Amino acid sequence: MSESGLLTTSIQYGVVARSLPLSGKVLKGYLDAAGTGLGIGNPNVEFTPNVSACRLTSDGGTARVFWGKRNGEVAVTTAARVMDPGRASSKLVRCKVEDHHDGIVNEIALDSAVNRFVSGGADGQVKLWDTKTVVCLWSSDKQLQSLVIDPFLKVSSALADGIIAGALNSGDILLWISSRQVHSDDFSSPASFAQYRIMSPISKGQPSLQDAFIPKPQPTLLCVRRHSQTTAVLLIGYSDHSFFYRVVVDLISGKHETTAFGDPSFGYNSIVEPIFAAQPDDCSFIITGDLIGSVGIYDWDTPQTSSSVVPTRRLEAHEDGAVTALAWSSVVLATGSACGTTTVWDALTLEPLRRFSSPVPRAAPGREVGGVSKIVIEKELLVIIADNRVMSWKVGQVHHRDTPHRSKHARANKNPVPKGQRMHILFFVDTQLIKRCRAIRSA
Image (cartoon, helix red, strand yellow):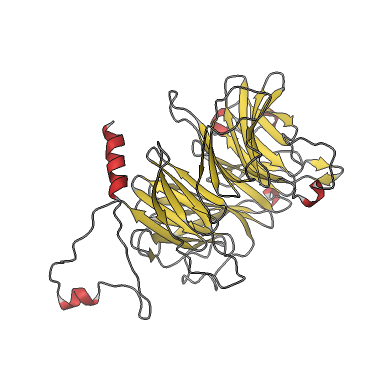
């Protein structure tokens, strides 16, 4: 939420924790999907085990948690002043029973520009919801494949432009376009959507014996944007696949053009991270990480070609495993690996600036090592999430060891950690990173 507040979610427990990343303190109590309040702060006693999807957003000091459950229910938790040290109050709003999905909620997509969100479920339906009331405003028809339901695995939206997209388990992509403003208060007519079906970008050739041992690529990323007045553009990435695809759809004729990005000489993509331009003069590019630890940077605005688009820049980021997390700012690029290590690179020269070891203790032989699942860059603050631990690092000055004299009472209460536990706060200064930051800012 800011440099002094962090929200982290656990699908396994169905709770959201509140913590202070620069001090390592975890605030007592969790936001859960059952509406029981913050409780006693023990997720092993108070948890919601049927959560299948969760998304977080914040507006000032108010946090909103969007829950999707295995029974098809959709709910929203709103907590004002969520980072207050005391027990912040929360409010849970559930959807109506008749608005439930008929299966597991696989994905929830938020749109920061409007007060709406989209969900996709195992029932082969995509639903549009109102954030405040959690009322279903629109629902698509159920998708079938050979009389069997074809579930939606990924959904995306650009509701300010009236666009909703969903990727099916079969590989096809559905695109819905509305001529009306989806974020308007009087939006309620499902007939205002026009549907376009896009066949799977992955070539469906004759399967061979070798293909029987290769896992079927599953969509891991789906982004939709308005390209022009008459076209929309899709970005879709897959697991166990060397390519990601750009699909430009003509909204008048329904035709589409597909461009493949990737280099089959390297490993399968493990993560695809889009960096879209915020200003008209900026450029858009895509950063990918693969299973062998390398990172590729692609020019998103490359013209349509018959062959695949290769990366403009590539670097060997990690030697200890696949790239599982990516974060970009105008100053640095951060990459995380499956073994828990994180490396910070210069955003212009791609030279390594600092390497962080895994915050997770060494696993016992035969047990899986926790990898980096998320990296957040907020100005000069870096937050790394690996397994169930959070590590934060901020550029700053080293504090002097000589501290002013304190009273006996102040020294006794300076460490709020309970007896039997110890908390270590480490301050690092990277002079090379500071010099590069100042040089970029002065330029």
